[in-house]
Amino acid sequence: MKPGNLHQKKQLPKSNDSNLHRKVAQSIGNQILTGVYAPGAILPNEADWCRIYGASRTTVREAVKTLNAKGLLKSRTKIGSRVEPRENWNILDRDVLSWHIAAMDPREFFVSVQQVRKILEPEVAALAAVNRTSAQLRTISEAFEDMRSAKHGRDSVEPDVRFHLALLAAANNPLLSPFGIMIESALTNMFEFTSTHNPEPNVFIPRHESILKAVAKGNPSAARRAAQILLDDTDLTIAGFPKGTRAKKIRKT
Amino acid sequence: MKPGNLHQKKQLPKSNDSNLHRKVAQSIGNQILTGVYAPGAILPNEADWCRIYGASRTTVREAVKTLNAKGLLKSRTKIGSRVEPRENWNILDRDVLSWHIAAMDPREFFVSVQQVRKILEPEVAALAAVNRTSAQLRTISEAFEDMRSAKHGRDSVEPDVRFHLALLAAANNPLLSPFGIMIESALTNMFEFTSTHNPEPNVFIPRHESILKAVAKGNPSAARRAAQILLDDTDLTIAGFPKGTRAKKIRKT
DNA sequence: CAATCGTTATTTGTATGATAATTAAGGACA
DNA sequence: TGTCCTTAATTATCATACAAATAACGATTG
Image (tube, rainbow over the protein chains, first blue to last red):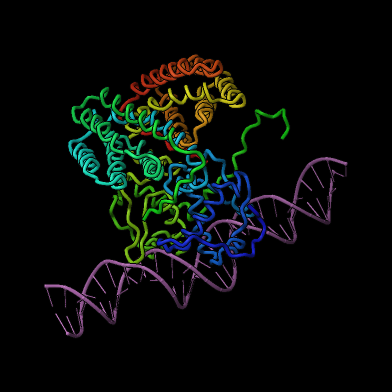
């Protein structure tokens, strides 16, 4: 990538979200996540960004404040904005995660996600089996029914996501909720692969049913085991992904 | 970089807490976290905030953008800013977490944290045992030595935090890094209790040493077990906390 | 020479006022 | 009753100016 021509206006991705400061934030965020500006680097100053995007300073500053708030930058007077070290990035923020996914090899992403999911989700299922309210159980159950009755594979993605998010919520630990975004991203993006490379998504229905039943019964160890089995199956699916394929961009509305 | 000064104290840059928009963001953020404005509620509009804080609209807007970026709000034209549902809050953001801690019963917080730590940290230790680089091992080891050589309890907090963060980093999974903030907050705030209510903090030294040795040897199951033991001990400490005590406010920079 | 102390220049921070864009809500009309 | 238009409330964007912080530089002095 060629740095240098600051006088040229950037092509901002057109999006239904017509907020200019949001687009600017996304553009800069993407450049950070793709390594155009590495941790420790000083970004162009506000005046430069104004020229680059043809936006007012107000707008640029709001974009920069957004990135500050997500831990990607730290701005100081007379210095400018410096890219923060990676460990300070709010990687589980919805925007940051989407930039991250767009920037990295999707296979690598799935490996990282599966590693975390295999640590968390069995225990989440176990906690849900113990801590769930009846309303939360109903939500999980509804998601499962919608998943089962989905005709096409793509129709089962949304209830599938809903199932896992409901399970996570039923664990009733607020510190776990940021993972909902990770799970959602993973399942949604994974569909881009499974739909094109995997003929039969219905194998997963009984796996989800086992989790649901265990949570309904209030049996934590059964829930834990059921979640582990589902994740092992998911591992196999991922292992079948062809190398070098790029995930299509999913536009969230 | 000179090779000799690995032990140099990290120069904390003078905190820019004097930023007005930051103060406004903190104030509004606190009010959201304490429930003054509940999820779904519409906040006062920008003009109101200007009057309330005596700040310009520019400043208020930057504060609101910050809160938007952290998932606490969503602003829309003609509507105003609405508080988002809790599950969208970036609870593992440094600011949001500190507001959260200030707003809730600290015992409750420790329970939530311990639940998550007991899920994650044993597996983190196991991953670190397998994935660590030698540089990462050195960092962990240095933290341990600093911890051991600390004279007073309060001097062992910083290396203790450093130990756990280094372990987390050594797991080499970027999706886990947001938990560093949680761990840091937990350990730092916990000291406010242990220092006043627990006479002997040195019990934990050998526990940490077991983890270090297992990670050094590259033995994941030993690392996992050692981490579990440490966390069980921590549970006991927390169980001894008197009820109703409030954590003192720790100002992190 | 080395260290100290102002001075200057650069960059972000804050303020003000104006206009545009979005859209909920209410009113006019068929 | 339902549709379409107008209005009003609020955020979004722009332009300009000045304030504050501070790194970099250079003069002064021991």
